[in-house]
Image 1: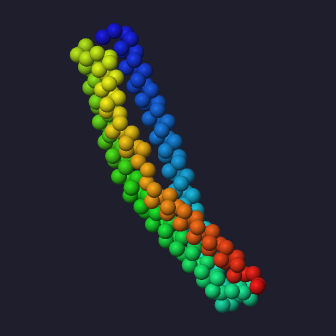
Image 2 (image 1 turned 30 degrees about the horizontal axis):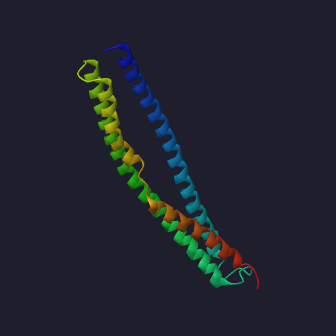
Amino acid sequence: MDENAQSIINIMFDSQTKIREMIFKTQKENLHQRRAFLLSIGTVSSAIIGFTLPTIGSSPLIRHSYILYGGLFCLLLNVFITFALLAYIYSVESKKLEQVQTAYEGFTGKTSELASQLKSNQITIDTFIKGCANSAPQFSKISKATNYIHIIVNIIIFASFFSGLVCITLSLIPW
């Protein structure tokens, strides 16, 4: 095998390693931030419920208790949906990580096999590049999967949170 082919293989493997590390680091940070944000919203909703419940029926500040009940219901709904979504996210991410790991191992195994064939002059550089390109889409299909349920549930979480806050605030305003 000539030096050009060896340098192409080395560059390709180095690039794969750097890209993989960068992608996994970014995804890890993003997932951590999303989980922390959802957990914060659930915790704040729980705290508001906890501080508001003792004032029902005893506080002269509450002018419209039926609106307060609606706000507390929205926040309670928010807490349940938020923690259910977090449980769902953990289970789905676990399954997807297994799929990604399997696909990545298959991809690296295929490229390693092609690289050894290239080193022993069994295949050409063009065949090596085409073989790597043909095995890569299996990995990209898993990583590009979009789950629209998360988007819809996030909208419901934010709407119930802000609706609860607005209702609790409105229950304090005299009309």
